[in-house]
Image 1: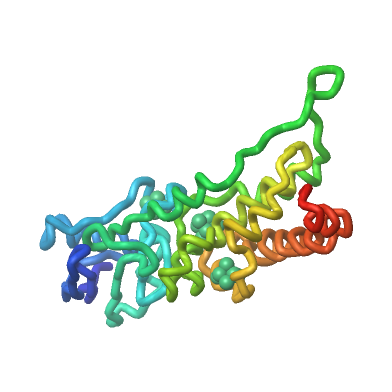
Image 2: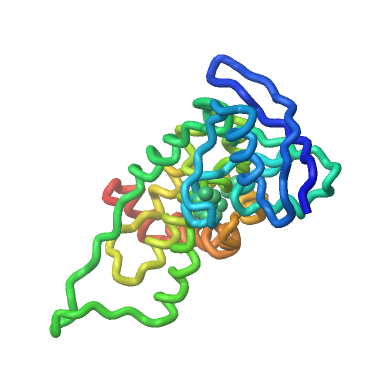
Length: 248
Ligand code: SF4
Ligand code: F3S
Ligand code: FES
Protein backbone atom coordinates (compact mmCIF):
# COMPACT_ATOMS: atom_id res chain seq x y z
CA UNK A 1 0.00 0.00 0.00
CA UNK A 2 1.37 3.42 -0.93
CA UNK A 3 1.15 6.73 0.90
CA UNK A 4 2.45 10.29 0.69
CA UNK A 5 5.50 10.79 2.87
CA UNK A 6 6.47 14.25 4.08
CA UNK A 7 10.22 14.76 3.95
CA UNK A 8 12.57 17.57 4.85
CA UNK A 9 15.91 17.25 3.12
CA UNK A 10 18.92 19.50 3.61
CA UNK A 11 19.95 21.17 0.37
CA UNK A 12 23.07 23.28 0.02
CA UNK A 13 26.85 23.28 -0.09
CA UNK A 14 29.89 24.67 1.77
CA UNK A 15 28.51 28.20 1.52
CA UNK A 16 25.28 27.31 3.35
CA UNK A 17 21.87 25.78 2.80
CA UNK A 18 18.49 25.01 4.26
CA UNK A 19 15.91 22.27 4.64
CA UNK A 20 13.66 21.73 1.62
CA UNK A 21 10.09 20.44 2.13
CA UNK A 22 8.88 17.64 -0.14
CA UNK A 23 6.04 15.16 -0.39
CA UNK A 24 7.07 11.84 -1.91
CA UNK A 25 4.95 8.87 -2.88
CA UNK A 26 6.30 5.79 -1.11
CA UNK A 27 5.32 2.15 -0.71
CA UNK A 28 5.20 -0.15 2.25
CA UNK A 29 8.50 -1.95 2.85
CA UNK A 30 10.65 0.84 1.43
CA UNK A 31 13.64 2.47 3.12
CA UNK A 32 14.65 6.13 3.39
CA UNK A 33 17.06 5.75 0.47
CA UNK A 34 14.16 4.56 -1.77
CA UNK A 35 12.20 7.68 -0.88
CA UNK A 36 15.18 9.89 -1.67
CA UNK A 37 15.75 8.14 -5.01
CA UNK A 38 12.10 8.75 -5.91
CA UNK A 39 12.49 12.37 -4.87
CA UNK A 40 15.55 12.60 -7.10
CA UNK A 41 13.74 10.95 -10.01
CA UNK A 42 10.57 13.03 -9.82
CA UNK A 43 11.23 16.40 -8.19
CA UNK A 44 14.87 17.11 -7.37
CA UNK A 45 17.08 15.75 -10.14
CA UNK A 46 20.12 17.54 -8.76
CA UNK A 47 19.87 16.12 -5.22
CA UNK A 48 23.32 14.79 -4.23
CA UNK A 49 23.35 11.47 -2.35
CA UNK A 50 26.21 9.03 -1.87
CA UNK A 51 25.31 5.35 -1.95
CA UNK A 52 26.45 2.11 -3.52
CA UNK A 53 25.17 -1.24 -2.29
CA UNK A 54 21.73 -0.53 -0.82
CA UNK A 55 22.41 -3.51 1.43
CA UNK A 56 24.10 -1.99 4.48
CA UNK A 57 27.51 -3.21 3.41
CA UNK A 58 29.38 -0.42 1.63
CA UNK A 59 29.08 2.25 4.33
CA UNK A 60 28.42 5.04 1.77
CA UNK A 61 24.91 6.20 2.58
CA UNK A 62 25.51 7.58 6.08
CA UNK A 63 23.41 10.61 7.05
CA UNK A 64 21.32 11.87 9.95
CA UNK A 65 17.68 10.87 9.99
CA UNK A 66 15.59 12.86 12.41
CA UNK A 67 18.88 13.87 14.01
CA UNK A 68 20.21 10.36 14.49
CA UNK A 69 23.24 9.09 12.53
CA UNK A 70 22.02 6.13 10.43
CA UNK A 71 22.46 4.34 7.10
CA UNK A 72 19.76 5.59 4.72
CA UNK A 73 19.51 2.20 3.02
CA UNK A 74 18.88 0.36 6.28
CA UNK A 75 16.36 2.74 7.79
CA UNK A 76 12.87 1.41 7.10
CA UNK A 77 10.02 3.84 6.58
CA UNK A 78 8.00 1.53 8.80
CA UNK A 79 10.16 2.70 11.74
CA UNK A 80 8.17 5.95 11.55
CA UNK A 81 4.48 6.78 11.67
CA UNK A 82 3.12 7.38 8.11
CA UNK A 83 2.07 10.92 9.07
CA UNK A 84 5.48 11.71 10.59
CA UNK A 85 7.84 14.03 8.69
CA UNK A 86 11.24 12.45 8.08
CA UNK A 87 14.12 14.90 8.13
CA UNK A 88 17.37 13.93 6.43
CA UNK A 89 20.52 15.97 6.96
CA UNK A 90 24.19 15.35 6.16
CA UNK A 91 26.57 14.01 8.83
CA UNK A 92 27.28 16.98 11.03
CA UNK A 93 30.87 16.16 12.00
CA UNK A 94 32.20 16.43 8.44
CA UNK A 95 32.25 19.31 5.94
CA UNK A 96 29.40 19.30 3.43
CA UNK A 97 30.26 18.90 -0.23
CA UNK A 98 26.69 19.14 -1.47
CA UNK A 99 23.27 18.22 -0.07
CA UNK A 100 23.66 14.90 1.79
CA UNK A 101 27.22 14.25 0.67
CA UNK A 102 30.01 15.07 3.11
CA UNK A 103 33.78 15.12 2.82
CA UNK A 104 34.96 12.26 5.04
CA UNK A 105 38.67 12.61 4.26
CA UNK A 106 39.40 13.33 7.96
CA UNK A 107 38.94 9.59 8.43
CA UNK A 108 41.35 8.67 5.66
CA UNK A 109 43.99 10.95 7.19
CA UNK A 110 43.53 9.20 10.54
CA UNK A 111 43.84 5.81 8.84
CA UNK A 112 47.22 6.85 7.41
CA UNK A 113 48.58 7.58 10.91
CA UNK A 114 48.04 4.01 12.01
CA UNK A 115 50.99 1.61 11.63
CA UNK A 116 50.07 -1.42 9.55
CA UNK A 117 50.45 -4.98 10.82
CA UNK A 118 53.99 -6.31 10.69
CA UNK A 119 54.16 -10.00 11.39
CA UNK A 120 57.03 -11.71 13.21
CA UNK A 121 59.06 -14.60 11.76
CA UNK A 122 57.33 -17.78 10.58
CA UNK A 123 57.47 -21.06 12.48
CA UNK A 124 60.26 -23.48 11.38
CA UNK A 125 57.79 -25.24 9.02
CA UNK A 126 57.10 -21.96 7.22
CA UNK A 127 53.65 -21.46 8.70
CA UNK A 128 52.22 -18.87 11.03
CA UNK A 129 49.90 -19.97 13.82
CA UNK A 130 47.55 -18.20 16.16
CA UNK A 131 45.03 -19.42 18.70
CA UNK A 132 41.41 -19.72 17.61
CA UNK A 133 40.33 -17.35 20.38
CA UNK A 134 42.55 -14.62 18.87
CA UNK A 135 41.09 -15.26 15.41
CA UNK A 136 37.57 -14.94 16.77
CA UNK A 137 38.27 -11.78 18.76
CA UNK A 138 39.34 -10.00 15.59
CA UNK A 139 36.25 -11.07 13.60
CA UNK A 140 34.01 -8.57 15.36
CA UNK A 141 36.36 -5.68 14.56
CA UNK A 142 36.60 -6.67 10.91
CA UNK A 143 32.84 -6.31 10.45
CA UNK A 144 33.40 -2.52 10.23
CA UNK A 145 32.02 -1.14 6.94
CA UNK A 146 33.65 2.29 7.41
CA UNK A 147 30.36 4.15 7.42
CA UNK A 148 31.89 6.63 9.90
CA UNK A 149 28.61 6.98 11.78
CA UNK A 150 30.53 6.36 15.02
CA UNK A 151 32.94 9.16 14.11
CA UNK A 152 30.00 11.44 13.32
CA UNK A 153 28.28 10.80 16.63
CA UNK A 154 31.27 11.07 18.96
CA UNK A 155 30.94 14.37 20.82
CA UNK A 156 34.73 14.81 21.02
CA UNK A 157 34.78 15.86 17.35
CA UNK A 158 31.07 16.46 16.68
CA UNK A 159 30.99 19.40 19.07
CA UNK A 160 34.66 20.40 18.91
CA UNK A 161 36.05 20.67 15.41
CA UNK A 162 39.39 21.78 16.87
CA UNK A 163 39.87 18.34 18.50
CA UNK A 164 40.12 16.63 15.11
CA UNK A 165 43.92 16.86 14.67
CA UNK A 166 44.48 15.18 18.04
CA UNK A 167 41.70 12.57 18.00
CA UNK A 168 41.47 9.52 15.74
CA UNK A 169 37.94 8.57 16.82
CA UNK A 170 36.13 5.32 17.64
CA UNK A 171 36.49 3.71 14.20
CA UNK A 172 40.26 3.95 14.51
CA UNK A 173 40.41 3.02 18.19
CA UNK A 174 38.75 -0.15 16.94
CA UNK A 175 41.56 -0.62 14.44
CA UNK A 176 44.28 0.17 17.01
CA UNK A 177 42.74 -2.44 19.30
CA UNK A 178 42.37 -5.00 16.52
CA UNK A 179 46.02 -4.73 15.54
CA UNK A 180 47.28 -4.46 19.11
CA UNK A 181 45.43 -7.67 20.01
CA UNK A 182 46.87 -9.50 17.00
CA UNK A 183 49.23 -12.04 18.57
CA UNK A 184 51.63 -12.12 15.59
CA UNK A 185 51.96 -8.38 15.07
CA UNK A 186 55.22 -6.86 16.26
CA UNK A 187 54.29 -3.14 16.49
CA UNK A 188 53.49 -1.63 19.87
CA UNK A 189 50.74 0.93 19.22
CA UNK A 190 49.99 1.80 22.81
CA UNK A 191 52.07 4.97 23.02
CA UNK A 192 50.66 6.13 19.69
CA UNK A 193 47.07 5.41 20.74
CA UNK A 194 47.62 7.67 23.71
CA UNK A 195 49.55 10.47 21.98
CA UNK A 196 48.70 10.86 18.26
CA UNK A 197 45.31 9.13 18.41
CA UNK A 198 44.17 10.77 21.65
CA UNK A 199 42.38 7.78 23.16
CA UNK A 200 42.55 9.57 26.53
CA UNK A 201 40.02 12.14 25.24
CA UNK A 202 37.35 9.44 24.96
CA UNK A 203 35.29 9.54 28.12
CA UNK A 204 33.41 6.31 27.31
CA UNK A 205 30.02 7.85 26.55
CA UNK A 206 29.32 4.79 24.30
CA UNK A 207 27.36 6.86 21.74
CA UNK A 208 29.60 5.34 19.04
CA UNK A 209 28.49 1.83 19.99
CA UNK A 210 24.83 2.84 19.95
CA UNK A 211 24.91 3.96 16.30
CA UNK A 212 27.13 1.24 14.81
CA UNK A 213 25.03 -0.53 12.14
CA UNK A 214 27.21 -3.63 12.44
CA UNK A 215 26.51 -3.88 16.17
CA UNK A 216 30.22 -3.80 16.99
CA UNK A 217 30.72 -3.27 20.72
CA UNK A 218 33.26 -0.53 20.02
CA UNK A 219 33.51 0.81 23.56
CA UNK A 220 33.44 -2.41 25.58
CA UNK A 221 35.47 -4.63 23.29
CA UNK A 222 37.93 -2.20 21.72
CA UNK A 223 38.22 1.18 23.46
CA UNK A 224 38.16 0.06 27.09
CA UNK A 225 40.64 -2.84 26.54
CA UNK A 226 42.88 -0.47 24.55
CA UNK A 227 42.74 2.13 27.31
CA UNK A 228 43.71 -0.59 29.80
CA UNK A 229 46.66 -1.60 27.63
CA UNK A 230 47.79 2.02 27.42
CA UNK A 231 47.58 2.39 31.21
CA UNK A 232 49.43 -0.91 31.74
CA UNK A 233 52.23 0.41 29.58
CA UNK A 234 52.32 3.76 31.38
CA UNK A 235 52.67 2.08 34.78
CA UNK A 236 55.03 -0.65 33.64
CA UNK A 237 58.12 0.01 35.86
CA UNK A 238 60.50 -0.76 32.98
CA UNK A 239 58.74 1.76 30.73
CA UNK A 240 58.82 4.32 33.55
CA UNK A 241 62.55 3.79 34.02
CA UNK A 242 63.12 3.84 30.26
CA UNK A 243 61.25 7.13 29.94
CA UNK A 244 63.29 8.59 32.79
CA UNK A 245 66.59 7.75 31.17
CA UNK A 246 65.30 8.37 27.66
CA UNK A 247 65.60 4.93 26.08
CA UNK A 248 61.94 4.01 25.43
FE1 SF4 B 1 30.52 2.27 11.01
FE2 SF4 B 1 30.58 0.67 13.15
FE3 SF4 B 1 32.71 0.83 11.53
FE4 SF4 B 1 32.06 2.88 13.09
S1 SF4 B 1 32.76 0.85 13.77
S2 SF4 B 1 32.68 3.01 10.95
S3 SF4 B 1 29.85 2.80 13.08
S4 SF4 B 1 30.69 0.05 11.02
FE1 F3S C 1 33.39 9.03 21.62
FE2 F3S C 1 32.71 6.48 21.70
FE3 F3S C 1 34.44 7.46 23.41
S1 F3S C 1 31.36 8.19 21.33
S2 F3S C 1 33.75 9.54 23.73
S3 F3S C 1 34.72 7.33 21.24
S4 F3S C 1 32.94 5.90 23.81
FE1 FES D 1 25.76 0.75 0.99
FE2 FES D 1 23.82 1.99 2.36
S1 FES D 1 24.18 2.04 0.22
S2 FES D 1 25.50 0.88 3.14
